[in-house]
Amino acid sequence: MRERTDLVELASEVTKVKRSGRSVMAVCPFHQEKTPSLSIDPARGLYHCFGCGKSGDVFRWVQELHGLDFHDAVEMLARRAGIALTEAPGAEQRRGRREELIRAVEAAVAFYHERLKSGKDAGPARSYLRGRGYDADVVDRFLLGYSPAGWDALTRYLEKAGFGTKTLTTAGLSTTTSKGRLIDRFRGRAMFPIYDLRGDAVGFGARQLEGEPPKYLNSPETPVYHKSRLLYGLNWAKSDIVRRGEAVVVEGYTDVIAFHLAGMPVAVATCGTALGDEHFDLLRRFTERVILAFDADEAGAGAALRGFERSVPGDLDLRVAALPEGRDPADLVDAGELEALAKALSNSVPLLQFRLEQELGGFDLSEAEARGRAVKAAAKVVARHPDSLARHEYAVMLSRRTGVELDLIEAAVAREVRAGRDSAVRSEQRAPRRVPGEVKAERDLLRLLLANDPGVRRLDLVPDLFTDPDYREAFELIAPVVADLSPDATPDLGSVISGDDSPVAALLAELALTDDHKPAPALELVNRIEIGAIERRIEARRREQAGVDPEDRAYSDRLTGEIQALEKQRRRLRSQE
Ligand SMILES: [Zn+2]
Image (cartoon, rainbow, N blue to C red; front, top):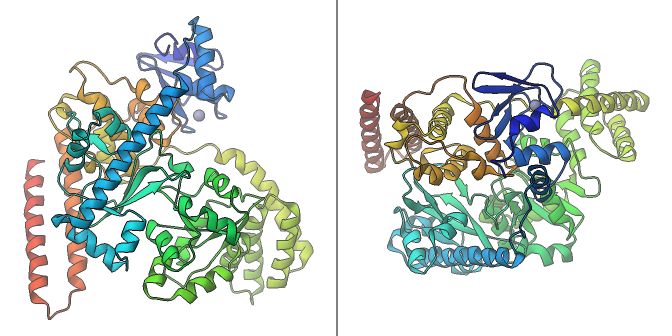
């Protein structure tokens, strides 16, 4: 049906479309503009707006424009194209698929767990977990594991157990190189299995031990693993959350376990994504009181909390437990400071109050001028609360704290409420993705991959090459498609991202339609990325060396040797450029 629906024709029904040569530009119907910044690729049936960032295929277009879900969009386009839809794939079949994926993930949980306990190669993982204070009990309770560092130990094991390639890649356990070689997704990492609310294993969080960043690598989105709707630990914590009448949101898997060790099993963590609306929907089923227990490190807390300012969920009692500076729950439990942790929880304050104190903390309230600026900054925060009564309460509090008259503060808040309404419309229009210099090579490499560039075809690229998690996930989506392609074809991106509204799908569409400069040859890009990785490794060794006890010559010499070997590798790569 995608083939039978012309995206350009569809677009021209609602907006101005201009053809110039191969490319088609349109005035974007998703944001206010006069000059066209929406680019359409008719051959691939993709669009991307360089103004507001919306992108996708025909299905996404219809969904977005008419506010439909995927199923309804398919039906609408079918009617348009005059196609009678056959029975939608049965629910029974989908259920079977789900069970098969969960069986595969659970087999992987058992494999990694066994490997951790008895593998000769699992020493670093065991000492990392021991260092966190985990004994055999904890390892068993949370089914922690170790993924071997080789290329395909798990993949071969699961294949032998009868799982097919499709299941392994769909479950996010295996991934393919750009030449179609099937390899393990997780290698040389400590493994934290992630369960859904029903207690089915659906994915993993994997912590780096010695190898390459990222520090944490998570399962990709799969039919059973939706990171925006998963909270690590909720399957274990839910009944205690109901009993205690509160849930605690922490930053990492080890923090969740720390709360268990401390005898307060009410903590949950997001799995590689920021806390969002759907997470709150999940928590709301069990409690109204949600305490955020993040590292009180000022910058950290600020960044983590800024996200909620635009929409504080009005029906939730959202609070912040300020932990001692620079320490997370895992640190506290590790150091045996359980009281400090319990105290931070019982002293939690409403999110807004916390944010206000943060704002006011930056001003010297004894100076008249600073007071004025403090009130303006604080009023901005208050204005974001959806409830006018609550806004009034906070205005009273602000007046008491600053000594500024209540009337003046109420007026300042009202001004910010009005300004907020105007800017909410504007901030919907996202600026195009900004790419830092070092990630440019990864971006260009993806563009070459999407163009089925002959230079890329000669290389066997692995996902680990990509340090940006979105780029890595994008690579994993298209690598299997590219592997099967004949030299003169381009990948059918529409079939990869069909109806998908994830940031990665949008990124792929954007990259396919970007035409701002010609990427460097593939080999050069790969070298550039590898040089970057080597430089990070050299940097890490240097930092480690700086902290080594001067008496420990052997250790310091070993690091020097490693640095020299890495520098040699870097010279070799540079000479190839
Ligand atoms: Zn737009």
